[in-house]
Length: 219
Ligand code: TMP
Image (cartoon, rainbow, N blue to C red; front, top):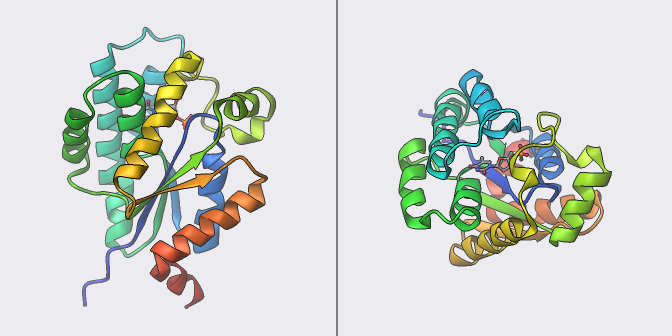
């Protein structure tokens, strides 16, 4: 019998939202493969440095989108698709929604065109659920500045984090619009609370939407 395809859950949010912490907690809870973008593969790690290291020249916006897409294509091919084919659950800290929110709403590239790019790069692999961890921008900024634990281990202060408040406001609004347009596959969780409360809210949403992930956990 062919094993059932595993489930893919993506976490999204502005820098400092706490999504990385929540991705890690959920992955531990359900025994999922935990991964992230950009940079989870050898190629991706090189792209991450080129994209985010303030020491590198700033790429053109379209080049930035293509490099994020290249990272994702490699990530799907090397990490995500093989795990899903084995029937494993996969939790990824950022996925296609980041390109739509950051390069689309944030940078101003055409969101419809980016959706096509993303679909091509992933070969059609889509999250079963995308969880947006939403916080007011002042909270995100405060967390980035004051609590290193909210920052991913693989993420020193990067070039995109240095962009202005207007950029992050567009990114946040973009996430909320994307989630509102596809309520079956997206969910917004209020991230402006302590870690355990947010984790409980995430768990509730995932249990509601993807009950089988927890069935596997219990079996
Ligand atoms: P991280 O800090 O969550 O690891 O993400 C690194 C940065 O890359 C973050 O500022 C968001 C940005 N990013 C994009 O702009 N587009 C993308 O498609 C992805 C995956 C990340």
